[in-house]
Length: 111
Length: 111
Image (cartoon, rainbow over all chains, first blue to last red):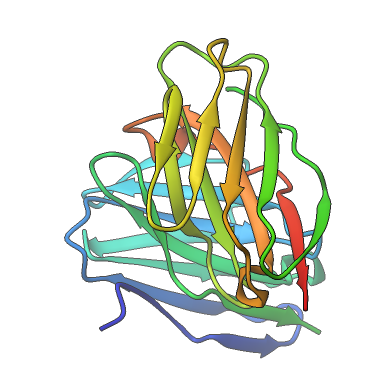
């Protein structure tokens, strides 16, 4: 039973399109995140939600819009995709002692 | 936020003990040290966390000197399946949102 699951795993799309990535966690955690891992493998936090409330919004273009319908879900919508958006996007959640649990990632390729 | 420095890559052989050292000279009093492991095409996975001296679990040991300005992750008798990227992170115990991932150490294990 997958703890943090995200879909789709692969996404190939054209520049200018809009796409969404969904994430769900069944661990009962209050806090969820979106991370971006670029081609150089640096993992950068994008957003953090606690109980459906946005608590961290790093310097990310406003084309990226997270949405948390409930504390078990955190979706990421990206408008007007650009070449530089190509990366692996990881969803994660954390427990009360700060341990992060990651999904398997969603590889986005913008052509 | 404390910055970490670790070797970009390391090589070793099956059956050997591998030690990966991380420098964190400006670690704060309340910061914990956490290590994550990332396999290709997967999200990072928590390995071990500690505050001082030594911590051991079924996977690894973590050695932290008295000044806490560095730490060493020790993997006993590695196997090919330990080939991965290892991230050293420093941050508040209960605040995963403030933890920053560095570039990690790419560990390659050979037969």
